[in-house]
Every structure is written in structure tokens, then in C-alpha cells.
Image (tube, protein in one colour):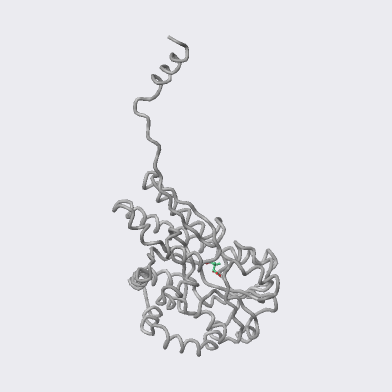
Length: 324
Ligand code: PAF
């Protein structure tokens, strides 16, 4: 036999009888605004690991960073992006009912906030997303927000007066800062650091895990633990992405989303516990003793407005919620 033909025959005989077909993978892309090493990154990674494992790698989850949350929600809505994990900052501009969970001093602590969002109240809010061409999959978490600025120590509500504070593109938050006498300046997170560097704004407010993960200590000297508002996050997907999954994969998807929620919340708790010390170590002046009652009183006119313009009955239900 000609040596070339002999080699070809040997290759055929050596090939496994039932060679495994190349694995057809469907890609699901999920974007969020923070570094991978953050509470959103922890959630997205847990989702990826759980969903890929449960589907035997028929799906590949790709995690990307995009620090413009409004843009991500728009992309999910038009279907050029599968999913996002986003704070509720801009979500009320798409699903107005969500504005109710953005009210300052609504939740006493993490247990209260997580309890309400996991209860029927939170589930009903997630169902509202479908009327807006979005699928609200699971509540995640950003954390209690605190104020930082480059001008002065903030001890009392009066100290906030006159500060130019970057807020999220969120009417509820903007109203609160206006009521305190600040000059709220809404912008996407992507614009924040240049705005702080150039002095377009004096301050910003975000949870400790965000301040730590983004090194905001490099552009802000003072941190006050105002905890003025709980900042929920939510995993939102394009409805068609979910509809394409068969029943078993959809169950796996929801289980992976719950794993993401747990990993995300655990990371917020851990970062909150060690973050303040870390920010002090990095040179920030931290004000820990904050008169919450004084801030609540100063916000009274805003609260009256929320009662009228949002869903007063829902706000009461959330405020008065207790675990069973
Ligand atoms: O400040 C914001 O815009 C949000 O808290 C952030 C940092 C994008 C996380 O959701």
C-alpha cells in the first residue's frame, strides 16, 4: 500500500468509534457596573457557575462590565443584551412602581430590606417588569448608601446644604437631596470619577462595597455613615432569553439566580463589615456618629411628597413589615 494511503487508513482506524460531537453552546451575556471583584461580580460569578454546571455546559455565561446602568437596561429591553444586574437607580424610569423601594429611611436594616424583597411584596414588584418588556428575575443588593465629599465633615443635615452631590438618575433620591439643601446632580456612574476630579461635583453617595471597590477614597476625603437609603439591585433579563429555555433549563436558571442572590448578599455583608476600617486605613476621615432622627426630620417635606406621588399604602406595608 502507498505510504500516504497507509497513514490515512491508520488514522481512520485510530479514531474513536463514537467521537463526541462538538458541544453546541448558547451564550448568555450578563453585564453589571462594577469590577469582577465586587458584590455584583460575586453574584454574576455564582450565577455563571451554577447555570453552566446545571446545564452540562450547554450554556456559556459571559460576564461583562458596563458602568452605565440606564444603557444596560435599555439594551436588555431592546434585546441586544440578555441580562443585567443593576441597582434600582435608573429602574424607576422604566418600571415606575420600583420607585417605592428607593425611598430614604424606608428599611431599618438589611434583614428588613431582604425580608420585604423576598416576600410577596417584592415578588409582586418583580412581576411589574413584564408590562415594560423586561423580566424581573431576582432581587439582588447594592447596600445602604453613605455620603462622601471633598469639602467638609458632615455631621448634621445642615452640613449637606450647598454641597453639589452626584446622585443616580433617580427622582426619589434627587428630591431627598434637594430637600436637604444640596444641589443634586444626576449622572451615570461612568461619569462620576471625572466629575469628582474636575470639581463638577463635591460629593457622591454609595454603599461601602462600591466606595471600596472603586477606590473612591482617592477622590473623596470625608465619609459620613448616613445610611440614608437602602439601594436594592435587581437581575433583569430580556423576556425572550428566558422564553428560549426549556422547562428544565428555566428551573436551573432560577436556581442559579437564587445562588447569585446569596453570593451577592454575603459579599455585601462581608464588605460592609470590613470596608469602613479599610477606608480609614486608606486615609478617609470617617464620621460614624450620625443623628439619623435629625436627617429623617429634615426630610419630612420629601416624605410627604412620596406619600402623595408614590404608592402610600405600599410604603406603609413595607415600613411595617415584620418577619412571620
Ligand atoms: O451609584 C451608582 O450608580 C450605583 O450605586 C452603582 C455604583 C452603579 C452600583 O449599582
